[in-house]
Image (cartoon, rainbow, N blue to C red):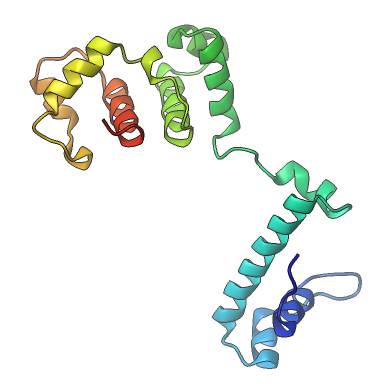
Length: 177
């Protein structure tokens, strides 16, 4: 960890709870160091984040062993990761819903989450070239994605559901055509 200015290091350490030491409150630290209480709370949060980042990068025992189970390797939820793995393996959303005892809408929400947070999502497996072309045509006069409305798809008479519309919108955000 890079060296902190002495007052910041003291705020970090004095705010910790230890054996027969309850740790100082934000108010106590504010008075001792000439800050406002809210500034101390923000500073402590920032210092804790810096410490976690350092522990994660250096995997220093015993801190890493305590922290590792809490550190996620992906911003995608565990359930959505499992749904996505099933999708890559099986490909059939209804079958995945039945197998996992989930609603189809939940499976779709999981896939939308993965599509938003993963740059390599296989959009083509759910959006055929024909669907993509039809959606391109619907939104040809509305280039700003934030102004797209599902009602435009419905008005065009397309037999798509909101999931496909939203998936296409995510794809276009990530892979601007």
